[in-house]
Image 1 (cartoon, rainbow, N blue to C red):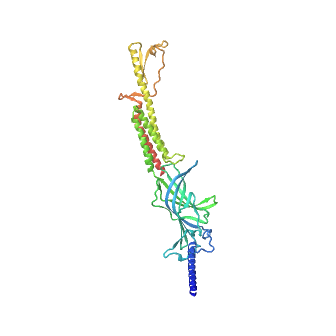
Image 2: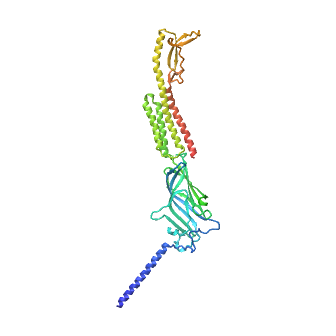
Image 3: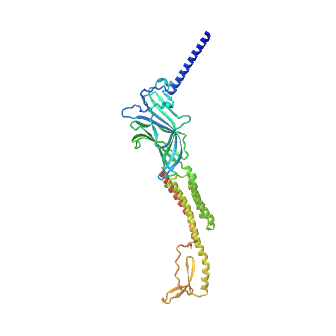
Length: 456
């Protein structure tokens, strides 16, 4: 019986020690995770900024490491402007001095002057509240938790880091498209603390770009321009510290040279072949010119052109190319009309000339032969009774006819030097073979230097 009691007492004592050990281990674990080994003063209030010299604000150093920039697209268009947006993936770093912290030395590992705390601990600290002024969305990246960290240094400096992405709105100008250069700022401003309480400034590293960052349609200009200023916000009634970084996007022209400028130039040159086609190939000539015009229209309407209301540099190029092809089509209409007039006069001469020569051979009357615009007329010379000694031309005894006006445009003539007949529409085609290429090359020589000068 005594042995049984001793055994039960021994078991009870053992269970007691086990429960005490488990409670101590659990308490130690809870204290370690929920309460950091950083002792805050009893009167510490996280809503109050760290103390500083009288009248001086708390200095917050800010830096950004840009990981990627993508999705430069149009978001919305109204009657006034077009808003383009681009997404920036980045790491942000903030650093400030918190003199109220009491940090024991035993929390630092040997040889280290800093310790990294859990993000939950940061909620108990005073925090600056910068935000992206011109952003549509700004979020901290998450997977299983937010990608943030807080680092404490022995000199009581707090360093906060976070991985985040922001969608930034940018007002872009496309007068020089596709040789445009866009300057898009990112404004970072303190939200609730004015410039007398919190002062934002760029750290020594400022804004750094990922060396492997490459954009599909743009070159990112270097170095980036950084500014520190104080901006008045009427919505918040006060001056607030503001940081600004300007991204310079220089559009790459290679894509448009291959997809737009080179093909359109070839189409314009193809339209010049119509000047070597005679009027006996009317279907081929018309088909060639109309096909060139439709090709240019399809090419420019299907191009990825920003939907803005003003004239762009690409619009001027499109107008020059289409005007050249349209002028070639108009030239064909002109030479065709001249050819019709020439054929009419050529077909009329054999009918009139034999009849007049036959009358002259019969001696019916004295005649005077005259050419008017390629047609032959025969008239009888008679004396008028009222004016002796003066002759009048009267054909075959009929009433006097008024003289016909000379044609304003001769459709054919004979070269006085060679005696070769010159036909107007053929001469126009020959001149067009040189004039059209010269005018287009003059347009190119004026277009590109002016565009490059303005874009630079």
